[in-house]
Image (cartoon, rainbow, N blue to C red; front, side, top):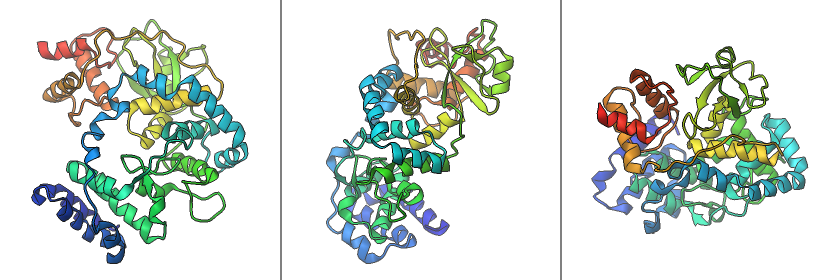
Length: 387
């Protein structure tokens, strides 16, 4: 799609309320951006004709576990010992295809397999929804997010390229195949191990190569662990949460085993349960994993699962349990309070990532909190309410 077509699509999505609840009229409004993407009217009509809204999708987006569950609970399920064991079996079963994918893309085999497991449970849970009513409905229900309309058009582009509609089935969000690629991700990242049309539905080698290619194209740095369990020195003053590895070394940080940190790159210090709990340094590759799914919990679990698949120990530090985890309204209240103080300019959605944690760190530092850990705790909420 050219810039003109993209702008037309954004304008249509922004004007969604003008359709006054008329789903069919909204779908018809996507004809122009589809044309701009090279989709013929015949292809458009083969999908749009008789397309109906999927009532089962209301509220699905807000209920995603990787954004709503406590991180430890999410990781315990997503990177469970059972899934790690299944991942090791997949490593053995598809050793040749994995080795080829790793050589071609520079992404480690265990990371590729971990994402395969996270996304579709190694092909056992791909979803079987027709992506077109799914994406059209999500676009209609979420006018604040133009992505779904763009993905609807990208799905039409796949049809135009000759991929049969019966293959274009996937999850409640429109993600397809073993890698759970959205249509635009398929167009950009899918690769065939044999040189033909990539088949992420029935060909494991294509799926593994496509996952690796996604990581490479998203900036994967060879030899850099995404998640490093860190030993925090007693002298640490909590003045920074994000800096070069050289600065972390100078501050006395080391791996949990006392080993050296990577020589280059930027890392963010992450306390998933506050300063009383474990500490991790999140490297640039952690944020590459977030390109696959924007959730910190997802990237964290994917990195942990990869370590477990590779047979390495991980999560060895004591992890305290929160007595009163924040609910969605309280998480949003933290973001709203940070925004009112000019410390945060992101969405008020209760989803905490690096931007929110850095804003909390700034609040803590400005308020004289000794261990400014950036953790969104009840104490942070009370601090905001008190000032």
